[in-house]
Image (cartoon, rainbow, N blue to C red; front, side, top):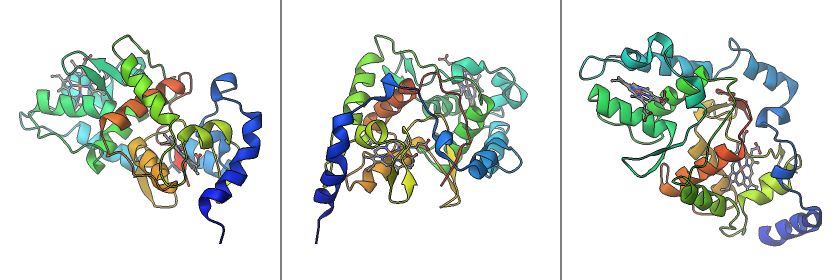
Length: 257
Ligand code: HEC
Ligand code: HEC
């Protein structure tokens, strides 16, 4: 029996000669790899099944917290007071916590600090729904993460993880998403692995998938032990991925298989 490692080595060694990197080419959103029908579904808000999660998030946004305030008290009805460019610039550095804040962390912080709510567990369904709603509001806005001096160590950490080989199959993110995008793997077309559509709806599972959830799935797919959801590793990777996709339009909620 041919073991997987050998098989992958055969498949992956040859094209390495023609190594190219995403930075040297056009950035392509994951939606460009979809079938026209799925892309149409993503773009049509009435057909997009991810809109259910967005709607749930919208309800949460207007729900009274422990102190009777709601998110809308400060951010306006339907988030009308949001600066959408600011949303597209996350993760940002939080001085008080001395670390990057993802949108989920900012939402959780606001809930705890300003509504006296008990914080959500990172990546739980409710939090992903609120994140979906907030990012949906910024749909079409271009991802624009600035790597400040304070963010740099986290960015470098994320980049290193992205380019490190892990697990039984000795694979790294960049192998699939920078070197082999556009090629087929187990019936799926590999994309450049961007984060601009997250949280997104999966036709296969019938559920929303967060960015950390997707990354975990990728780790599992090459039989590596994933980092836990909300860990500093995944947050650094999230920072790297968003910055790597700077310029792509936010497409939340994207639709994927
Ligand atoms: C008392 C006012 C207040 C309430 C209530 C509040 N926030 Fe905020 N929120 C803020 C402030 C102030 C910032 C800016 C933080 C910063 O720049 O460091 C912010 C930032 C944000 C951001 C980042 C984008 C931006 O405009 O800076 C998001 C997303 C957000 N809040 C979501 C929420 C959600 C969701 C809730 C309800 C769970 C909520 N907020 C409740 C005051 C509030
Ligand atoms: C063995 C190949 C493989 C490796 C290695 C891999 N992935 Fe993936 N990844 C996939 C496949 C297959 C998909 C689904 C199709 C697609 O969008 O590429 C996917 C999808 C994604 C997506 C969603 C893109 C979208 O637009 O929906 C992201 C983000 C992603 N991967 C990040 C990563 C990160 C980060 C790593 C490293 C921890 C990684 N991947 C490692 C195969 C891989």
